[in-house]
Amino acid sequence: MERKKKRLANVPEDLQDYKSKAKLWFGGLFAPDREIYIARAPARLDVMGGIADYCGAVALQGVLKQAAVVGIQLRRDRRLLVKSVGIENDGFRSIADYDLDRFYDTGAVKSFANIRQDLLKDPSTLWMAYVLGAYPVLLHEKIAGQFGNGATICIKSNIPVQAGLGASSALVMATLLAMKQAYSLAPDAFQLAKCCQQVEQQIIGVPGGIVAPLTSAMGKNGKLLVIRCQPHELLKMITLPADIQFIGINSRIKPANDHNHYIDSRTAALLGRKILIARLQEQGVANPFNGYLCNLAAEHWQERYQNLLPEQMTGRKFLDQYAGHDDEMTEIELKKTYHVQNCAAFPVYENARVQKFIKKLETYTQTGNRTILAEAGELMYESHAAYSELVNLGTNETDILVSLVKKLGPENGLYGARVSGNGGGGTVVVLTAKNNEDTIRNITSQYYDQTGFKPDIFTESSPGGLELGAETIKFT
Image (tube, rainbow, N blue to C red; front, side, top):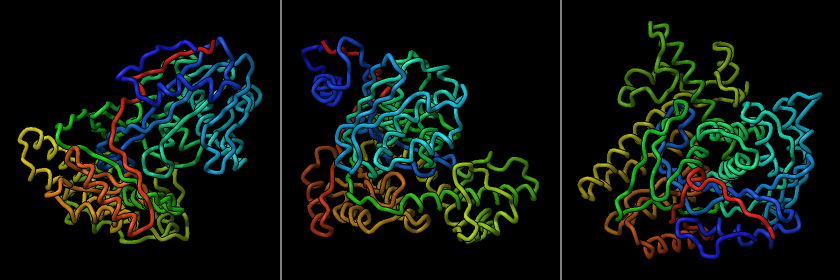
């Protein structure tokens, strides 16, 4: 295989391993003497705000060492052959086969609904849809005009699934980056992130946000991204002081119902948005909060806005009065009771917390005053509590982890913690002093004693997908 003999310090180990072991892992699938385009996209760590992206929040995100690596080799036929190393451990078939022509009907690209039905019909290869869904999305978005060749696509990922780390977004992003090189496409970072979001929304049927794919694409080693989701804008990157870091502790809880609770909370918030727009327009406000709840000032919520919303409302009653909630990715259930007031309040308060948190970090960078870190940590604890109190996405296990962090506190170099991503289990993100491994191990040991689950710890960062781009190798 053509490759450099020495490992490069700035190239992640998983990418180097893929290059050196691709023949061992995939030699029966990749053909010799033909280019293999390899791309890598990392997991994200949702430090603050990621769950409120659908309401226009500012989100603070980091990238982890864990990543998905995808290699693509163009074929001379129109077959799509996909293999994922290790997916069989989760009960799936590790190899899937498809044909490019199945995306078309009499020369035109099929609808997303038809493609979704076809890709998802075999439960043993559901994972395939995240990868192959990139093809119809690129066609629908007019980024690709035609795919003349099929491809062999081989995957190696070490991101835990259902851990709130954006595993599916990283997989789709790595696939898109490899396809970009293999098929000579030219999407920019925001187009890639939108395509990734479209795969999850239109092909998988999950109302995912833009934050995870944008972070996976644009992340930087050791930096935090500040993203405003209106609809998507990278405001800046923050370099942390050398004496602190954010780490992730995976609770190992993979809840069965977090997806439904997330959809309910999102739907309820957007019901609240529609009601507020109508009520404020009745008062003569022409374009209230520009359509994004997070443009409302949290300090005025209770006084000006809260009482304009019902505490609860059935889907049927809402539709009778307002026709729809302007969100094509969630369906209003007629018999369901939505907690409109709390779910609309959550993104407003969360957005305010994120912006205060960012200012605290920047102040600490300037002053080194650790009291500021404790104040930032309190905002994390408030955010975590709101997951349970307002949007029903808390769990006992993540509460235990956060409580253990809070109990040890700043005197042990622990400043704050909150559940990451969509909640309902998954990973807790912790603001801690650097080189605090013994304290973190103490927490995970106590957690294991209380729950019987041995958590994963994520401490290291890595480059985003666009920074590395795609590399090319050949088998000899």
